[in-house]
Image (tube, rainbow, N blue to C red):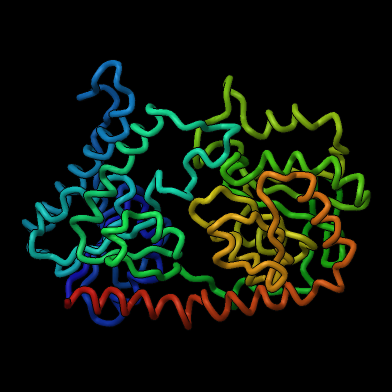
Length: 411
């Protein structure tokens, strides 16, 4: 079978699936905009360029169309790359595309007979999702609704045109329109539980602070790609003054960049990190709070292995891989009681859930976990067990992904 993957930043979520399918004897190609960071055995990657959308075709006074315009340009660029493959004799039986940036828009125009599979990562604006979840930063309005409607245009097209779709969690599947949910199979990307595992001997050196942290220390960790409201950074920071009073020996290590992955940027050209520090900084002992920025994955793993309590907060949105990795490592999780987190954490069974909007309760809960670390060890054990059982990459998720591609491609 001939299989074509499309992902602007390939391999992305297809990192393991593509080479496994190639190893099974299938002919596997991939289209990508960015240069892959590694070569995947048996996978032929074709890069293509995207025309700049800076000035062409924009409608003055209608900025809400800019994003849709960019998606169309990306879709046309991907279609040109597909047409070039077609002219060279490669006509796929299956196309598996991530539609998030528009690349799936014209797949069927180039390959009308192919089976189109799409990765349904997130559909915006559904009830119970991220839109207007946090009234501090987003209020319902006609303009906001119109923006979300246009933001979903290319995703609606992909869901309508595809033969089947895959979402990594039930929450993400259920955000899609009801009429399309029967097309969507829930299979997570998977966690390598052999790699992400407890290590009682782990330690981390914070050179700038002259500290060596190790298992048994009162280390509270918070991890996000960027420090921003979508991942509850503002709530976490507001909890720290009380937490420091309750646990004067605790060290807080915060991982994440100063940019924005989701939602709006901070106002006035600042970062969310700086704004939150201005809000609570005069009530903090900053000598016990360590901002380490973005760190290599190996170092992040070591940090989680020494963590006494790991805090994970999120809007109802895409679940971070870092949470499942932390659970696989055996972290004691204090997480927000929001839909995507409830899907993987059962309160007092494999973690602790708290109200997203209650920083005082967050501080008291974290302090309690530090005080009662020995009594709560069972939460660490069951956290890891639940990931092995439901999200292990080798035994659960990858086999299900391969089955999804092969079975849906022949229906």
